[in-house]
Image (cartoon, rainbow, N blue to C red):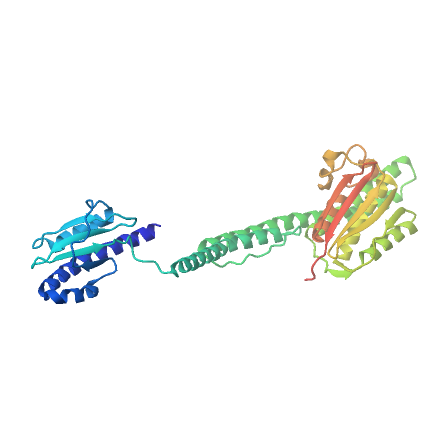
Amino acid sequence: MLTIDERNDASMGAMIDYVEVDLRTAVALLERLPHDERAAWLPRLERGGYRYTLDAGQAGAPVTAPHSLRLLASVRRALTPGHAFTANAVAGGAERFQVHVPLADGQPLTVDFRPRRGLPLSERLPWMLAAQLALVALACWLAVRLAIRPLRTLAQAADALGPDLRPVRMPEQGPSEVVAAARAFNAMQQRIAAYVDERLRILAAISHDLQTPITRMRLRVDLMDESPQQQRLIDDLQHLEDLARQGIGYARAMHGQLEPARAIDPNDLLDAMALDYRDSGADVAYASAGGAPFCTRPGALRRVVANLVDNGLKYAGEVQIVMERAGPDAITIRVLDRGPGIPEAALEQVFEPFYRLESSRNRDTGGTGLGLAIARQLALTLGGGLSLHNRPDGGLEARLVLRAVSRR
């Protein structure tokens, strides 16, 4: 609207300047023409906003309309001095006024003005404005897309930083601010990976080096005479050995080399695991959901399920494995037991390394506090998640939700 108003105001000013010159020229021309030739020239002198007639015109009230007053000021400059004239408004719906000028020989001349508030608009103007608006909207959309693309790339790089903490390099390109942010993010990833890698290497080295003195101590204890003290030493050494082995397993799960993904039938894998457990005398049942190819890391999947089954057998004595398919690229594996369960407040805490409950599941059962932590880390490498839920009728459910892993 501001643009249209400014355009109309500018066009009105130009038209007023033109009227001043044109009216002065027209009156001078008509005065020099013979009386009988003047009427033939009137159509030639007519313009879009006013026309000439050789008569007294119409009477009316004084001119008060804003646009008419601007034109009347131009008429006054054109006819003064030299010509006496009068002006009056003409009644009607549209704005209109007349200027009455007697020529030099006394013949009346009337200039009938119909002021326009601006230049006429083309029928194509609305379509052109709509097209311009669409182009501006498109340009704004593209500008916003280009502006937020680095943020999207940063978010994707942050999400791609998986449980193994291996850096996913962000492209260092674009505006200087984006390049600086990308360099800082890449450096941060490298520092985090280096810190974690160093701590995990220390954990793995300590766990590995502990196995040698534990083995020597075990040999010495086996050579001792049988006694209650000997059995307690053997139990303690067994606990140390389990702790060292689980420490190495946790380090490998956190920062080890990822196993290549391949298509397998998870139904066959779980059924074979259940058969192996039953052959060893464990009470493990499996409910099949039908076989179909599923791309995953079978070694990691086997370790996760084995940890969950061993945990269930340790505290309940019997376990049931159930697999459900949520589509071609998603499965859910449930490991169910009838044990004492876990307090609701501790369902997440038990996934923390070296965390053990002191009531139903405690040190007396031989746990190291790393089994569930390892299982969750491996589940993350499988593109899934692991959670624990107390069953309504008693017992615990370990729920492993997996999505197909892409082969890379």
